[in-house]
Image 1 (cartoon, rainbow, N blue to C red):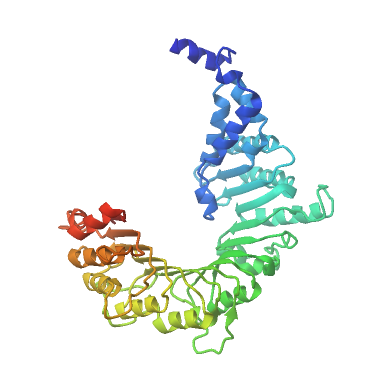
Image 2: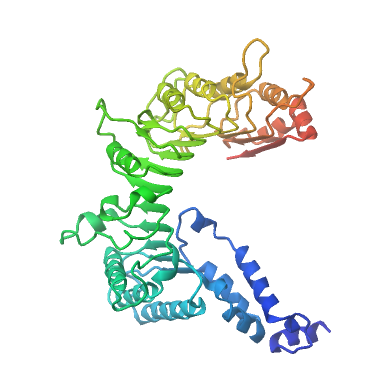
Length: 492
């Protein structure tokens, strides 16, 4: 019977119950399957390096004729377009060109299946720069995609400068009705734009203005991400952005972006050069900004006023150190400065709820002073830079001591719900940690405390293999686990 049923699947015999299902229901099942696919890399601002997502859609059409017909006539299945190719010097032969050309033909068929009404999410990646027949094929890809520009909802492009310039020219032509006849605004649905590039592509151009991309100036953009793509080569309406992620050359460039984007809700910036030490710079106020991520060693928080700020992520992991630990009472480069942090909180009057610190070095006194300035904090994550020194036992023990509720003094961050410590040394007091968790949980106090989740990542070194087990065996830690606290201890 199993063999017979299997044959029915392959031939599409109506005796198979699933194949007698109405096509409309089968299509809805396919759409549900599509919603369960992993688009996390795209959502996090990365263009996939292969066509895995495409293969997961195409597999539906490989089951049988009925499945293939149903999938082919369901446009919503095909609205995520990922085209990733990797030409190289070693693969310029006939086989490589034919493979590249086959990918282009596949993209054309894919676009046809999207229909004419549904919004498209387009992600194209081609690195390194192709040449010859491969470059011609990539130009065809650009032409095909632009024909559907009126349906672009989200676009991510990692393309050579010449391809972006060509796309820019075609989009400009489409707005004039030639050679395409879409609308006056070439991308009327575009909400999110991601551009990836290489600096030399834009700063070594022999033709002035050749690299400027201005076809998106009328798009109703809300989100913009630039990676190795200089913002001065892109013309958009900055004032309408609610989310921005980018890399700037200097502190002044960072502040310039923020001045142009007054309604930002979420922002992530990287900057490594501060050319304004001691300069008088007017503070920038962003009244709607709720989430801010700042990376590298230059943190301009002393120039910001953020009254709505709820989430702050500071990546301070680029400073080189000697790898031998740190003086716990010194504030070094590669850390945060308590005056700047406390000043930001007090100047803004914000209610910070989530704080993530990724640091190379951090003084315990600075750390506790920052926590005392944020009494409404709900979530705290602290991590030492990967490849640097692990958090030594002095810091962890002092941190645990500072977070332990005391009757004679106010509790630091009394509303803390989530606590995570990463890259921790294995040399710390398990008993002190158990006491802190026990008191934070509210055990023995007649009322439940706020802490619900604790995660600890221990740096794996020789002799520390049993540390995780020892932590989980501690009596008070076992008690809070039994009563419902989530405690997760593992090795880095």
